Length: 207
Image (tube, rainbow, N blue to C red; front, side):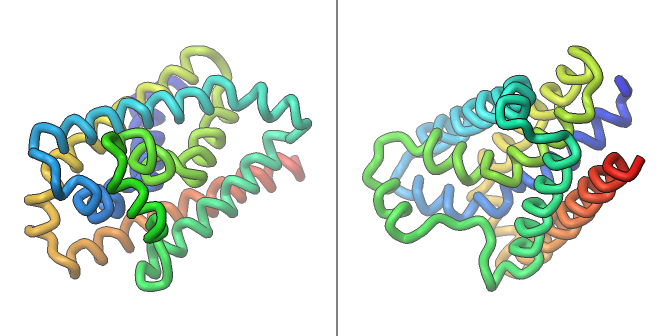
């Protein structure tokens, strides 16, 4: 399983679920009164916290699954359903999407640091991201495979930081139409991932 192809597949899958593009408007709203240097620091630490959170579920998720007696098949099917629900919100951004409540946004504006909450969790490493990491973690057959998935998480974090770093310029270039189109494209990829997770889980059950 150790291959560039597996690393690339894992990277694309996790990136499409993390989808920093939908986090950009909230991130900019919460950091509008900060200097560019401080905004970049928040983005950097948000990406670092995301690695820590998803890495913890990658390496500790199997113990949690075993403790509750959940099968790998169950994780894949449940994870697939959760990812599909998340994908639907991306395909229909007007009906939902990854947003925080006005109360949470107001609370966050009064916080000196938003890098952990709400940026890292739940904007970047929410239930969908955790589900896809657990799904890939269940496919690993050894330590090397697990570290390939972790490497993909790190690469996603680097990409997330890059997107948030240029967020003020990027959101001007893309505009509302571009953001909607990009969000729906990510939603379609996420939907395919969710369906594949369910297919893999069902295939394991009937094998």
